[in-house]
Length: 179
Image (cartoon, rainbow, N blue to C red; front, side, top):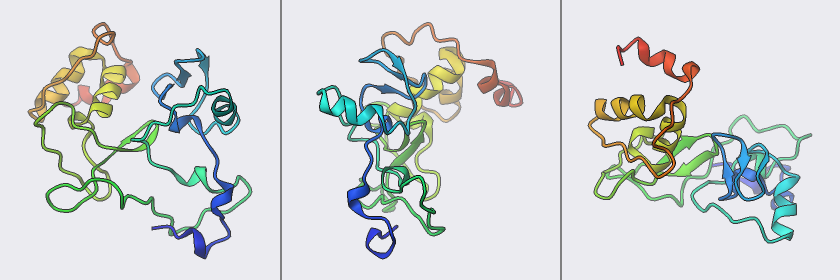
């Protein structure tokens, strides 16, 4: 874990970012509340939103190095995200999923689904609520359903996602597998 006490970075340098807000749609780089384009590391809009009462903290998104390290600082080569407060799987590995927002607490795609994590890559996207949202956006409902079925997981399609078609640049790797 990156120890803020042992480096030049101080906790008072914390920067609020759009990636930490519930209203931020990382698939579209868009604020759903204000209906504006933005990006995950936006450190200008998030504090303004907080002052105006628009910012709603997404508690599943973990803080990242860009929330603490200033632009002119060097990132320590031994930086490791702090995953110590996340729930653990049966083997004691933190349950996280890598998404476009960053590292998030892994939420099962549906009740009763057992999550297994890898200490480097986390839980596979097919198994998580957040990961399935990204799969549907990237691959479309039809292909995302096949990808989930390949690992024996049911795809949960939310209202408004039924017509997602995906994007060819994301679909290309799956053509090799005949999906």
